[in-house]
Length: 120
Image (cartoon, rainbow, N blue to C red; front, side, top):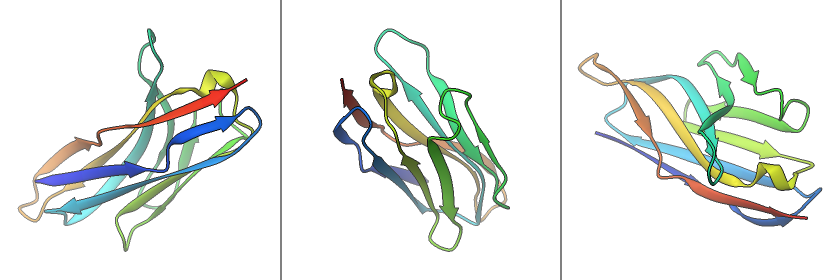
């Protein structure tokens, strides 16, 4: 079993910054792709940013140039630095991880989510 725990959400004014973290723990041999998703009220969940184990990143057009995803493979951590935040960035942010477990089983895991609220 693997657990993902996000932290760093909160309330910020438009134009401000927040940093999110996600810690993975449990039965982990290695973690492959790690992804941040978000879901705003009444909207579908959307991919925000992803990063491969080797550090190749991908971003939603809506956050390019403002958000930066990074990871620490040694600590099984993923980060999302969010700058120049906009009210439309308000959502619950989830981290996900594609995990290879010690028995070589591949399994995807989700965190519980952290709320980010951007006031105008």
